[in-house]
Length: 525
Image (cartoon, rainbow, N blue to C red; front, top):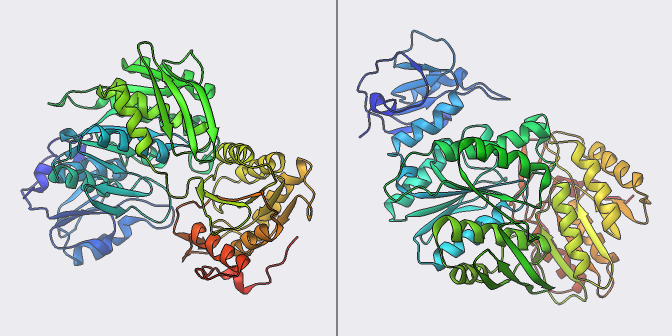
């Protein structure tokens, strides 16, 4: 069993007091309600509540020690003061679980769009190559045959959960892990002790400016992945220390390339032009997927993926580059791994109940993701493109206008609706979105509509659809809830689409999930 003193033996930050007792530690908790006898409770300041206020309750529940940022005294258990509690969590959790990242080859994927897809592509490539591989994504964590849910909304799991997953992978005999890494996870130090060996950035576009304050801060948060890559300790299995960049993302490429150079790290690029180290040629698109050639300085290999959309060629190239040039996997094996991925839940997922038009659910929830989703949709139909989407409350407000402008330009009909309004006024959010649509020539009641209830918005889109049209619901994808006020209501766009299609066709199907907007006059503007 680890002791309090052992937890702090190897941390990269100062703490007080410098000499700690040999108190046995049975667990780590950042929520006082999860504290059990022998746990260390780490108190963190938060936007809504301050963990320091719950220290007495944590002690009553059996905390053996407390870590926090404030200058406190007089507690009945040891109190260790640190400069940054958030940063402390990841390193203390890593120490508690025996630093599992040092025993694994860790491949990190970050970026605004494409993280989940690239992570899953890489996971399938490594599995195809016979490597015992796990994955921690914003969708789930996969450890052998076990699949664990990682939360309701998309972000990197908390630091102690990440370290727990990594430790379980080590116990299961895995040797490699693909870790999808969000900007929140990087900025909040949740992944600081993961010991990355390969780092991929897919792109950096407009997103999370509410959290980071500016594009520059957001880009810097993503760039922290390379600082962590440089800080990784030497491992018995070796350290690839490779950074991989998207040459087709000029706003971030130069900045990130310079970061890698300053860290003295090896770097490679991928893209759709021969200027990249790894690029694609002879791309053929169809409704069932993509075929293309992957070209490097010394090889050319044919590839096939079940994924659709030009942007997924880039995701395939990113995964291929990490596997082949980071881990030495044969190009032909990597191509077979790309073909082995059947699809990603909620990513350009077809919902077919026999209707005479195409219905798709996609996760596109950023301006760039919506743009490429609609461009892909346009390639997939001879008819109209009808798009149902919203924009989240208490998040980057500028996205509302940008996404509505994008839809006004690329979709034939847009239905603006709810997407996690949280404690903001849904009507105010829709008004901001409508202003964006109007600024790009949209005509309310003709090319765009406002429907508060998301289920009703999907139904309305289906009613407007004609044979050979395409209806796409964007923004929620695989997510399993929607937040109104402070309540998470069970919601799955795929279930909602099936329910609406079943009603449309007059066949049996699932019930439309409940949202509180169903009780209000749905209306259509």
